[in-house]
Image (cartoon, rainbow, N blue to C red; front, side, top):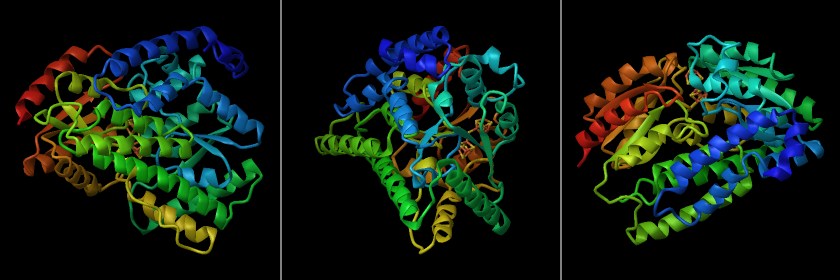
Length: 425
Ligand code: BJ8
């Protein structure tokens, strides 16, 4: 990675702290990912992406910027990548999943803030994230209270923070509000890039993102096979990488992996025995390098067969139907698809539990882990009704509230091992 040091210095990173971060990440990847047995060969591409996560991909972003293409950082699946691509921009997801810079983050945020938000601030304040540094603009969407208020503080750490209001109720007014926000966002992108969004450019963005979602949906379906042809850890990693890799290259690589998985399924080849307990994860998004729960579950002999999460099926569900002869009509098509996302910030939000139930059935799973980050009001509160609904349908649910630290690892291990034994077929 030494060839990238000048680039990191030019981006204003703190090289010593950045070295420390890369050392921890590299070791974790070795321990959690490269130690797995029986991985598909096509995972080699995703291993390569991870090995170059702060190298080659950042170089690509810098090249894009040199060509006048804006780099837009986002924190939520409600910010449409289609519109960013329509101005030839690059979209990078900036949610962070590492326990890093917590003290620095707490200079801006109260201690009882969820780990996902704190992690972003830790990375920004300690100057260790080249994605944050490379982004021309950050889009702070108003979803949960934590994020909404944190974006006010983020302006102290980045020169350009835009905001986007996201409704909390999916009624006529909420739909109209979101439509207006997407039109406003489109105008901001045009101004930033100096490029007009046309029907053709937006259709192109819709096609590129649609192909990416279709590939991830295909992967999700293949994970339903018994025995599972790929580990939950690898499934999660691919969804995580989808937020910052080049979309066309990523799509092709996922489809190559899916071809290999189809051959494995035909040969009844699995990463775990057909009798292994199968678990669905549901809850808060897990950003790179948050692999804690999957690692514990799969180390206990279970296999994670899907994620009802924004880094998973909640984020990739639905399709934008590119019907319409005007940009406004195509934006309406975006609104229709995006408002199918059943994030816990919405009230009421009955489709999330139904979605999880359907995923559980289709994946022949034996139980669900409801995963919430501590201090995440939306998911922690919604967990009660979620568990009641699913248990009433005979689906075993284990609720976990955790953070990015390792202090609770042994306690979680004990609870998860007990759950795995309880649901073992
Ligand atoms: S659409 S899930 S990506 S908001 S964990 S920061 S909710 S306190 S991440 Fe999300 Fe968009 Fe919803 Fe998806 Fe707040 Fe909870 Fe923290 Fe969270």
